[in-house]
Length: 79
Image 1: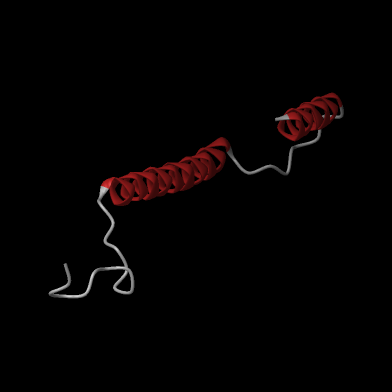
Image 2: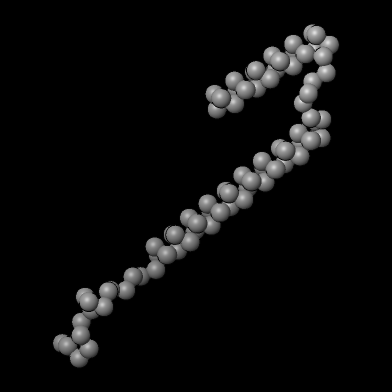
């Protein structure tokens, strides 16, 4: 979390400097930034859903009874 806050702080500092110098920012328009935010959120949603599906299938597999390997199973007809 710390790198994100440092990055945000640096961006705010540079933005304030640009405003003081009356320089136009080279950053893309807000609408483009919102599109990038949507991309990031979409990636996180899909990756989170994959993680949940993977855990659900793993827990379902763990709940199923396991068969003994053939080498440990009693021979047919053995008592």
